[in-house]
Amino acid sequence: MRKHIKFFVLIIILFIFCNAGNFASGQNEEQANDEIKILNNEIQAQKDKLKDIEEKQKIYSNTIKQKQNEKANLNNQLAILENRLAKAELDIESAKIEIDRVNLEINKVNIEIETKNNEIEKEKKHIGNILKLMYQQSKANTLEIILLNDSLVDFLNQLKYLEDINKEISDSLQELEKYKKQLDKDKQNLTKKNTELLELKKELENKKGILDDEQQNKVFILDQVKSSEKQYQQLLLQAKQEQAQAAADIVSLEKTVREKVNKLSGGELEFNDQGLIWPVPQNTITAYFHDPEYPFRYIFEHPAIDIRAAQGTTIKAAASGYVAIAKDAGKGYSYIMIVHGDGLSTVYGHVSKIYVTADEYVVQGQAIGASGGMPGTNGAGRLTTGPHLHFEVRLNGIPVNPLEYLP
Image (cartoon, rainbow, N blue to C red):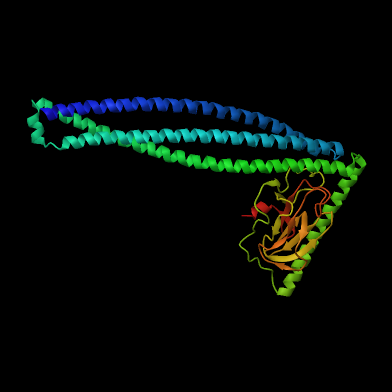
């Protein structure tokens, strides 16, 4: 009879303990839910700010396009620069808000992870207490339990309690598995958010650099033309002539050098490399191939991509081949052209230093020069928006989109 009483006492203690644990857990979960609700409201507020900024960015972009389609004059160019500056500032603000938003989401995920860990620990303790109770009851065999009970009804009631406990263990294990799966998912989400945060911080630095470039470009142009429309038109003419001459030389030399190499080697120049590599570290592309937002599109189409690179960054040959030209134009537009197999050639523009000479054979990855583009520096040319590498890929002399060839 004592064991029978002890059994029911243990049952009562266990359920009181579990309910107390559930009450404490419920309080913690409610607190966590309140914190998550506050974070969700703050995240939504950041999203609303971003939406407002996007609307302003569209206005600036439309104004830039409109001015680019109008007559090329100093007032229009300055209007384009002003709008690009304003848009760059909004880009920076947008990146900062995105960083704040992701930090809030990281805090939210951390709270969710902590909540799931607490739930897992609670279920573990719950299961442990039930198993202890079952272990104590297992010490008595079936005959002893029957003899200790006053009637068959008591015995059957006791078996019913054991069945209920077994079901509770099964339910707790299912809850435990559910919490573990959600915990793993939350941890993956946290890793993703941390990666996103690092990318946003890198993007913010790039946008700050672009803003600095735009400001320097405006100062440089005003310094060159002294606010004179006549001088500005002269600058445009010089830049147009400079680019036209470079384009003509590239087309002519590509054909001449390829014929020369094929004659000397007794066959077609082979392309032995595993595709092209990035000539400078892969970074922000500030202007795309035939970019509709290219600031000087009214003078010439942009036959390349502009890759943001700090002044003096090492330029590597994108593929092995022969140097067709390595033109040092002083303060003008300096560039290097390499002829490869399969009808491909590459051009590297706005170079501040040149390490190779015409007719020299270079291997993929070899340093051929240093990047430039800072207004007023060697190799930058008449019109430049800041430090970058102008990178062209040509197929049989015709410019093609470099991004279709780069990894």
